[in-house]
Length: 134
Image (tube, rainbow, N blue to C red):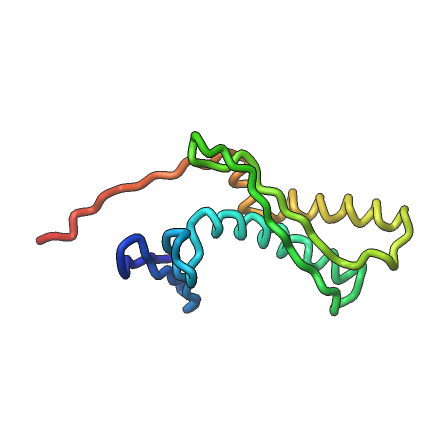
């Protein structure tokens, strides 16, 4: 993956498959901030991890919405938690089925969500300056 600076506090990010995301300051209307991307990465990683489980139990056409809400630690400029709500119609399940689905969903997230597992493990991040001159 690569990010190229395209303006003041503005980057265009691409992956090898051709996807493009604009990342900029939160004041930019048509871009995601890095913090928003982190929140979305956590939520959609969980969503991708549980998709098969949900469609198996509730049908291929199930409508699901993920809502993300961070807990901010403003004085440290970080998040202490990222909460994801999975909104969907569960009215077809009885109490026992619902409890079973909740367990299988959590197991799927714990097993398959790389972003969540990375955050939980406290991954180290590094940055290196590389001189491109001469």
